[in-house]
Image (cartoon, rainbow, N blue to C red):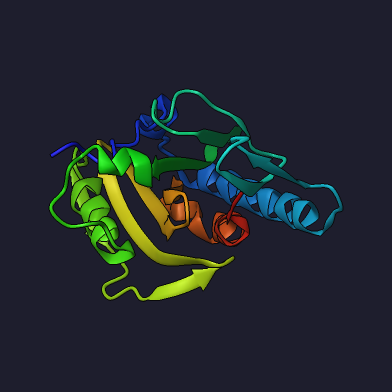
Length: 207
C-alpha cells in the first residue's frame, strides 16, 4: 500500500543538546520569560498573523514570526518554522500542511473508501516510524467539525536522539480531499506554542 504520510524530517537544530550549569539555568529561565513577553506582544498586536495557502485547496493563518521552510517534508504543500537561539535556549516551532485529494486516493484502488476515521487511523499507524520513542497522548480522540469539515485532533510526543518533541496533528476531511495539519515544537516549550498551534489548526479552511 502506498504510504499516506512520510516522516517529518526534523531540523538539525532539534538534535543539538544544550547542557547548563546553575548559572546557565538562571539565564535559561530569563530567556524563557523574555520569550513569553514577546509572545504576548505577538498575540495582542494587529497584523501579527497572515492568511496563507497553497492557492488551490486551502487557507490557514500563520503567525508572522514563522518563516517559510522547504526542508521539513518534501511532500508538504505549505511549511513554516521559527528558530531562534536566546542565550542557552533554542526556541523552535514548526507547522506544515499535507494534502491528499480524493482523486489521488482513487488511484490507490482501495477496496473500501476512506472515511475520516479510517484515514486518521492510517496516518497514525505510520506517524511514529523513524522515532526512537513515540507516544500518543490523545487516547480516544473524537470527531469534531472545524470550518465545515470533519476533524480529528491528536497530541503526541516522540524523541529522536536526545530531542524530545511535542506534536499536535489535525486530520481534516473536506469536499476535495483529506488534509493533515501538523504543528510541533520542543516538548519543554509546548506551553509557549500550543495557543498558536490551536489558532493555526482552528483557522484551517478548504477553498
